[in-house]
Image (cartoon, rainbow, N blue to C red; front, side, top):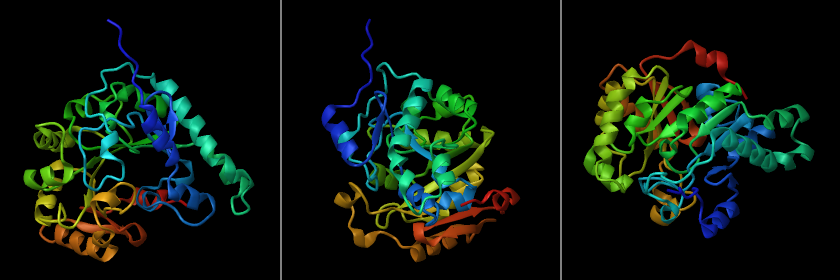
Length: 321
């Protein structure tokens, strides 16, 4: 039986490219974020630089499953109408080919900064050789059936990896080998009712799968983060429940962040409800109130805080521009 290659419909491809995505192979993509551009010009870095020591100008923001996702989160800045909610049962590109294409497309995206007066030549040349892969750009990466091989290939090139998942595929996470340098699990809500309202899942047992992922996390020997993308009126409620789930996960960090009114999120959520840093900081204080937790870092421009039981000495050693 012939397996059809995975592909992106031409009309969706055109829309992605207009939004400065660059398609890598048949089903993967990259896009440079605003902070990469700022970092090149010496205008600051992503909060992940401050929190985790990632050099923004050497970060490859990428996905191996650009239009495959089983959720339709109200805060997503991608168009839910683009997504294929089915598993990737089509023929996928090999990890080496995917990464070669990703880096090639990233180099094209930063090529114009070669002659920019504010960009040092050393920094520009470094940006051509990413040292970190943020596997998070669009879609749900655990739907890509060769995810372990992809992470292994990144690591073989001396690149670190941040894998961001919605937690609906615990069986994939359980069998990842190797594990990513850092695993992000986006906890979309503190309970099933708010989850259904906010995530609008395409699969019936999504909340149960997420609970399985939370129970699995203590056994995964890598750095782990529970990420909250908070939307007033949807999931920015019950901070004590977020605390309980975080404690159960035994993750290293909890990262509450306000949703951003950009892209297609603007069609679903009014700009006026986007929570500013003050609201996120207030909610974060409620999260830590009744547990042995503390706010160990914050970034006002990105409306995000970092919560943990205690700070880690390696963070101060790795902070970089």
